[in-house]
Image 1 (cartoon, rainbow, N blue to C red):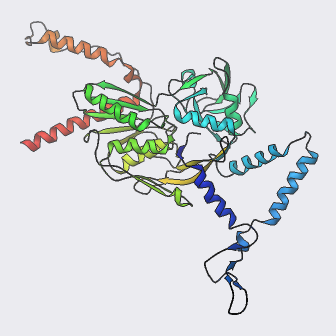
Image 2: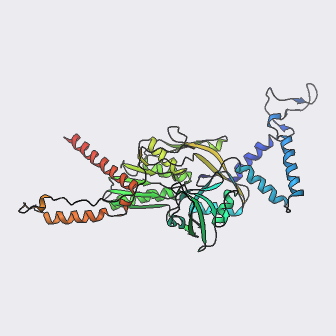
Image 3: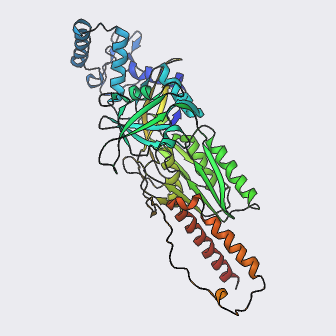
Length: 465
């Protein structure tokens, strides 16, 4: 699924792991430390060279009975499985199973999967355009990526995929399911989906294509009000986010009355990119910290001085498809009181995966830490709760009986700029029938920002008096 990923240099980490493994192997390990639990062997009584040897702690040794069990299973499969299986395949399957049993996000990356992961963080790859995870043996859609075949075909966050073409998903690993979803651009894959709002499975045909993800999109909704959408956190998302805000401000005479940051259906991505995006809106303070067992997994990220918007009111839109890096961003802005969080509860993925290369073509992606918001909240399996809950809704205009106004009365007094005013009203009415009215959450965010702007203007006017 979509994960907050931190890139970790493989060589140093492998050295650390090698040292750790050395200390747990059966046998004696050289040590210069003396402690109560070690045996000291000396040559001679009081003379001659001395060497301190630490006997291994039995509790830290590899369990021999379990190792025997593993080799026994390995041997039985080699001898009796219905088809011949080579040693390499069995060992890779063992590694995959070892990681997959830890949590839904840890996995072994063979050459193809490793290459696909690299592609997904740089913004271009082949497939359907959905971020997925596993739930109860089925593939769960965390979020469709904007403007991709899956998004255009109507795949929704929360959908459970039970069949890929004619292949049932039950029993497949996530990697196997992802492999089936990928294919030649232009080919059709039929997804059989269970959706909460549907009483029976539905089928959706999706045409595979080269997925080019535009990480940051922006536009002015109205004069003074900017909109920035982050679809996925990639390597350059932080700088693209800052540039988008600067462009909106330049387009609006150097300032904004309000900013909407949309991370709905954003499945996450690179952890550092979300930190950079939060830093752009914060003047100081902690953004996120991580805690794990190894020193390299215990990190703290803080904002640098300077808020790019100079304190412009911000509303962040989230939903159940907002995961990982999206939750880091929303949580940091919420804890600092920098933004109002609006929408529905987020996905709740509060763990960090580190990609650890094993060689040039193989790696493991392993959960190495949990992340916490500045106030110490763990989002794992809880998510971010919005300050204002706004559920998606379909808006329809009510065509009621038209009202008479002063301008309709015979002999009414004219306003000096009546024609200009009526023309402006008609233009405004036409503008209201725009795409924003089809998105209830976005419209609610804009209305909130307008209210905050009016309140701020009233308070400044009162202070001046």
